[in-house]
Image 1: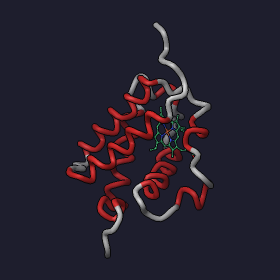
Image 2: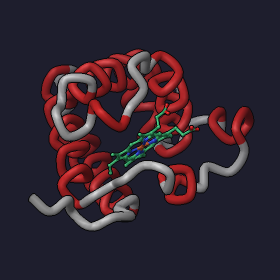
Image 3: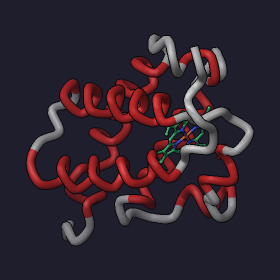
Image 4: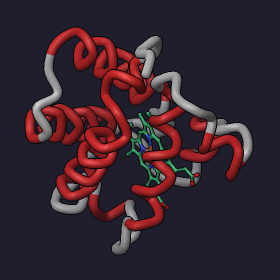
Length: 127
Ligand code: HEM
């Protein structure tokens, strides 16, 4: 099988493990858990679909759900700068857990960082 896109390098299995490791951390994170559903089975399924196409694989998210419009889909949820950084911290730890290394990790994490910062739609909560 040819490996022309990042998705072919990471593969379905490692991507699936990454997403599961990620949501397991999200569900334990004090800043993130409250805005996610208790059961993240469906969230994880959609994220696997989305990240598949984000990495150049088949457009299975769009086939089922239409254009991602990620910023619009996140608007109902209060995404503060603190939550965006927490999301990235969970992803970084999940990448460690599944031993995703090298150029692919650097590239993938860089693009997730840009996307996460773009999702911010509220200022930080004041305390
Ligand atoms: C859905 C939070 C960043 C991709 C969601 C949901 C929440 C959320 C609360 C709804 C979960 C559900 O109801 O099942 C956040 C927070 C972020 C963030 C706090 C911090 C910046 C991102 C990024 C991506 C992403 C960077 C992509 C790289 C998705 C996708 C969905 C989703 C694909 C499912 C959308 C759908 O319903 O079809 N996110 N998200 N999110 N998020 Fe995020």
